[in-house]
Amino acid sequence: MNGHKLNEFISKFDRMNYVYDFGDDWIHEIKLIREIENYNEASPRLLEAASQTPPEDVGGQVGYAVGVAVKTRILYWYYSR
Image 1 (spheres, one colour):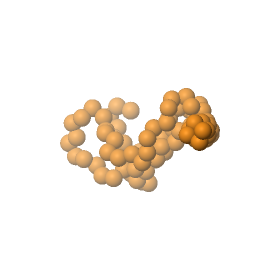
Image 2 (cartoon, one colour; image 1 turned 90 degrees about the horizontal axis):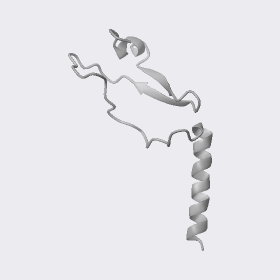
Image 3 (tube, one colour; image 1 turned 90 degrees about the vertical axis):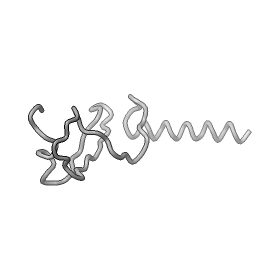
């Protein structure tokens, strides 16, 4: 991707989807807010995120939901004794 800017790919729509981990299919929406002229850093920076990241290789959205449910039940059992 050398020689290209991110805004070349998302300028028509102001956003794009990025798939992380093709096995688990974590889909992230990347939104172009503004372009900074004469930016001299090696790569763009994340300015804001909506929530915490899930653990690696958890099994995608379904695996993550199951993990949260199991953890909730274990905590409920532990604290209700």
